[in-house]
Length: 190
Image (cartoon, rainbow, N blue to C red; front, side, top):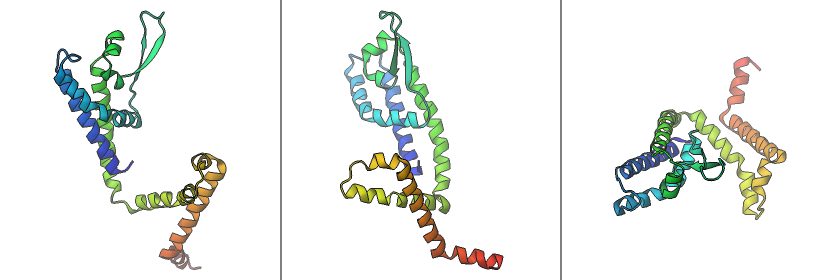
């Protein structure tokens, strides 16, 4: 993840946390129009919030026993459950759990942000990123030609082999273009 993506995810998590904290201040949340407005503001942030929590390694799924269903276990997403009053009441979900999960993810994203900021100024990092994107060019070309199964082909051994070959070719071209090979040979006396 690059610096700008980490920064964007952190901003979404902070906004969701602020809105959810504000939402929890209402006593009668499910019938209060002001609380419902906050829910509507939070709803578009849910997909990125869940994805950000997953990418940070913070779980959003809790398992609960259903009291009236013979102790069958249900898996509930604590972020999506915010929008369903029946789930919260029926399974006695903790209101603090989403806050704790988001705060834990925000700590991880802040650490990632500082690391990613240093990568912004690392030319080797950008070289590796460039080679990785350039190695995707055969698959982009196939997709532009109308082949729909390119995504599946990339996962096969042949697709990975093609990507490795393209990466090696790009690396060889870059080494020759900057004169690195000649410099090394002159250094060791060949």
